[in-house]
Image 1: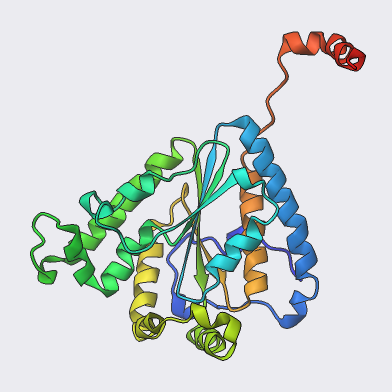
Image 2: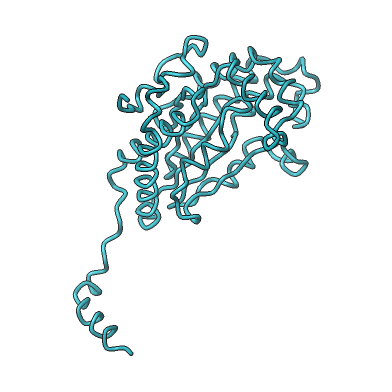
Length: 293
């Protein structure tokens, strides 16, 4: 299998999702993928241990994708070797009444990563320029000034939202948050097969929702709005990566490898040096402990 280069998946210029592959690899590439994934899982967890001691950066990983694109299993596998204190996952559902009393970014500010930790947004603030564009009537719940009807929601409204998101991400990345955004790019046919499996395999029946079929009817709209959001919000400090997601195992490996590769660029993340006074007397402290019974 060819090596994974993060730049092959990073959105630098404008992309066209309709011409972006949802599977780049053959089944033959899967032969040793589990072993490769296990190795990079361990390496990534070691970085988090050092980052925790360094206590200068937090890492925010945003996962977006259509239903069944594999976000939950992605989180489980990417962070499998982490100390449980080192990673926090937030799954954002429909805003509740309290959240709707604030602006749409408020609930995301509240759960940004602490220094030394990874935070994963399973769906994220991008839902506010994705699902709300497909269903603009949801905007009415936000009780915004000047928005009395859906007809009041102009193209400029969405442009403003994406600019606000860019400003939000610029602010947090300038204050110690390393941000990586992944769109799990799955084909419509692959989603159809995964939904069928949910219906055919009893252990997966609970995952099926009629809402999945209803949203599937808007596939074309979602692809258009994903493309527009990605093209307008992939920046140097908060880049988007489009991950071919028809093959779940390969997608997990690619995402894990990209996070690890990108973390290598932060050369200043190192374990703190031992205090000089302690270092000078280390032999004495060792003797004290050895003499204890």
